[in-house]
Image 1 (cartoon, one colour):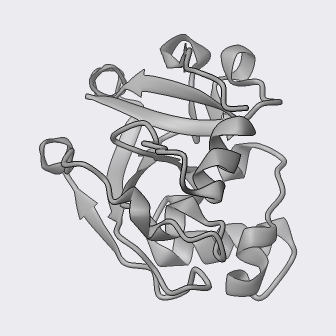
Image 2 (tube, one colour):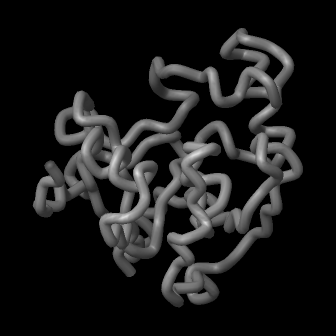
Length: 170
């Protein structure tokens, strides 16, 4: 099964692999409100309180964004990102994956998240509801079903990551 991730255009995925929050320096402002702290160690602790290993997980989608020219948030994500993909079965065979969690929504502010653990054969690949993305939220992963792959070492080695070539939006 192929899974997708939109990463900022400036990234080191092809060199360093796909790093979880616990393994990289990144802007954590989207977690400050929920973790009630701006300190990385507090944010990581809060993440792991939602489910074990979340700080070592990566978020991914079961399909590419289906932008139909009508949503500025999706357009912004596509324009400012590079799309990467990986084969989940390869990671499972190598023993890189610890667990898989599904997130199917949360409140408007990202709180009250709905997570449940799944096995690889229970990953839902039915089409995603891109119309749920709302310009006022600018949070793709709050409203669109996605999966969080908990990684034993907090990263996917670069050899498993492939860059997807897709059209550019003007």
